[in-house]
Structure formats: C-alpha cells, structure tokens
Image (cartoon, helix red, strand yellow):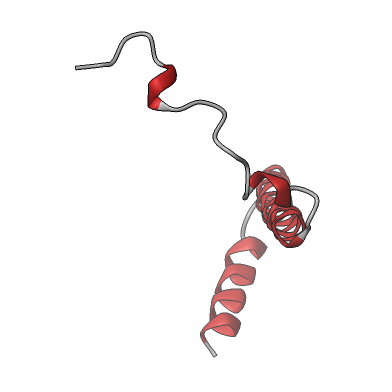
Amino acid sequence: MEREVIIDETVKKLNRLPLNKLRQVEDFVDFVMSRTDDKLLVEGIQKLTSDSKAFGYLKHEEDLYSVNDLKEKYR
C-alpha cells in the first residue's frame, strides 16, 4: 500500500509544478531508470561470467613463483 501512496502524493506534487520543472523531474527519472538498468545489466553480466567455465582455469592456476625465488625478503 505504501507504494501507491507515494505515487499518489508524487503525482499531486507534479501537477503543481511548472513545465520547466516537470522536464527536470523527467530528466532525473530517466537518469535513475538508466542507473537501475545499468546495474541490472552489470549484475547479469557478472552472473554469466561467474557461472561460465571460460575462466575456470584461473581457479586452479599453479603458482609460478615461490618464496625461494625472491632475491630479497621484506622484513
């Protein structure tokens, strides 16, 4: 029910705004929607790549170097 109340109150406030302010609100809503779309897209890509076996070789990568390969140890 809270969602409908927020929408109703917002519409009432929007009806009182002049046209130039409505355009600003529309631009802001477009911005928020694009960020939401971008976030969903990025999350989808991350899920696809994490589920993919294309980078599985990185999980079992052998160590190329060991402590014995160091010329000088940090103290």
